[in-house]
Length: 468
Image (cartoon, rainbow, N blue to C red):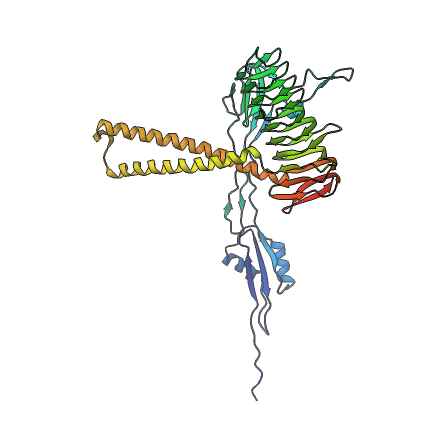
């Protein structure tokens, strides 16, 4: 019978390196028989063989070896991840419409509805906004000593609009004229104001103005009011077409029927909306009620009176819909949709189509230019006609590339806006009646029983009801 043979084997050092190389671990394999255990020098040599030179934890390494912590995965080296830069920010030096809208309260506590804060006048040269530049971030380093570059903060063009200019450092926006400052298409602009002391009727005709419009009366049925800036109507809008690229404030109510529409590029404020079509690029703020109307907002729709009601119709908003009462005891069909900007979706689809067409044209011109370049013929040897064609082709190429860049920037902006839908919600401060259909993003919630004091939000792809 053969004698038993003793197996002797020295201990081993196993090095484990994370994929991103920010952490390294050691696992000590114990010796067998009369084999030698691993020493501190063995551990350091193993790290060196794996090019681990940064962030080595000497105390952990010594403890690991001295205490013979066999078979344990111990962190022995750790790098520093990069710190990404902060995006550039814009600081407005004037109160935004949402901050200043509403009647002024005098010393006696009375509300002055003649001064509602819709217009905010500025003087030529006044500072309107200041940009805080983006930061580059701080580099990191992995355990092999390789520097990890940070992601720099995103910059943006200064939001200069009509009648504004920037300082020499291109960090401040200032007013170029006296006028009303507002935000339109994400740019700061300064507009002048047109006032009408009466109704929009046969005595005035339709109004089409490049600045702001203030009407100290009603806008009567069949007439049109168009403004490049804001519109303020101190009376009612009845069966008219009122369109502003800026904000619209209506002291009375809106009843367009099927004859007209009220459309604001910015915010829209009114006492009530009845049997009307109303659209806004920003928020829609209604005091009393929205009844059997089609209402679309790029921001939120809010009805905030103590008896605030949304009854019937279709309400669409990118962010929030808020009211005290939603629907009616008669189960009137009321559709509420939030989470997708109703204005941006159509624009996005058009821009994608236009972008594809421009790319095709740019590629075609680029191909023709490359064919000419490969021909080796210098412009001096071309006929005057062909030389002119070459110049025109180069000019067109530059023009299309510039247009394509502008479209790409707008597409990126819209895609970022779509992401805001995750925060969309419907808030009801009193009761939601059966007959109401709530859609958040692509998820639908049908109200079959009355629900009180609730908020509807999107949670894990489903519409959830939670108490306010």
